Amino acid sequence: MTADNTERTALARLEALLGAYGAARERWPAERRAAAEALLARSPAAQTLYAAAARLDGLLDAARVEPAPAHLVGRVLAAAPEPAARPQGWLAGLIKPAAGLAFAAVLGLALGGVVSPFGAANGEIAEAETVNLAIGDVPEVEL
Image (tube, rainbow, N blue to C red; front, side, top):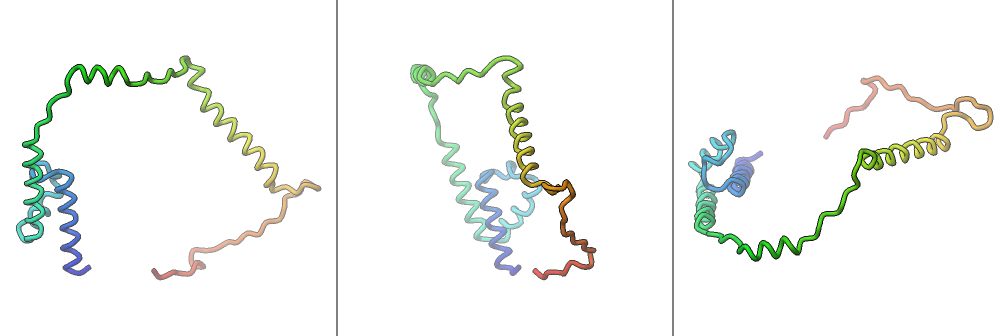
C-alpha cells in the first residue's frame, strides 16, 4: 500500500470517526483516539475535516427543540392503531414450532423416497463413485 493510499484510508477512518462521535475527543473510542490525534497533528486535510465536524457540533448544540404540545401528543396516541391481539395460552406458543417440525418431517420423508440410496427393485444399495484424496493430492492455486 502506498503512502498516498495509507493517508486516504486514514482520512476516511477519521471522517467515519467524526461522523459517528463528533469533534469532542473524549467521545472517541480510546483505541482509536491516539491514531486520530496523530493524524490531526500532521495532516491539514484531517484538520479541515475536524474543523467541519466542530462547526456541525456547534450548530447541533445551539439548536433547541421545543417539546410537542400535550394536545398534539394526545391526538397522535389516540389515532394510533391498537396492537393486534396475540393468542393466549401455552398451546398457542407451540403451534408454529410444531408446524415447522411437521413440515420438515414430511419433506424429509418425501425426499427420502425420491432420492434413496437403495435400489427400487432388489433392495440392494446402489453403486456410488467415491474419490479419496489425500491432502497432498489437492493442487495449489495461486491467488
